[in-house]
Image (cartoon, rainbow, N blue to C red; front, side):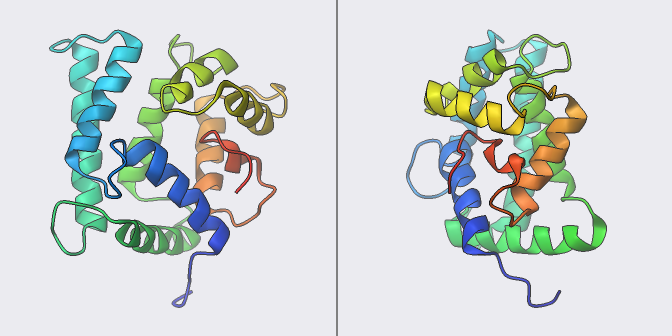
Length: 191
């Protein structure tokens, strides 16, 4: 396990998440300003006004994720995470997950937050319309959202509960199988 390396397929999936969900301003690095943009995008989408509990919770959660990302990924301590640092962090995280069966705590917090953000109705299930609403706000097309959702939900035969989302999330980040349904979780079906 000491010589674990990300496959090109894993790098493509990780780059997709980096580009779409973290590097919001598209300047090639992840910085706190990207997180601030994401917070406002999420809060606006849900109608969570500044100063209210849900906005505050979203901000606090994103601050925790940002601090952890700096701790584990920002190797040169410049308060920016480059793609190289991103890949290195994920190499270590995936390598550790092979032994523990789990991703780091901060990644699990991000997963929980993403479920909460996607479950706009609060019924503990993400449906197609909820998924499309959120992912379209990140620039993913309606057609790609539908294709992705149908892939990971097996044409909507599988309900996307917290547990199912957790399995898909783990599969997305850890699996090297191009046919794994979790690969579609973040709105892209082909890498």
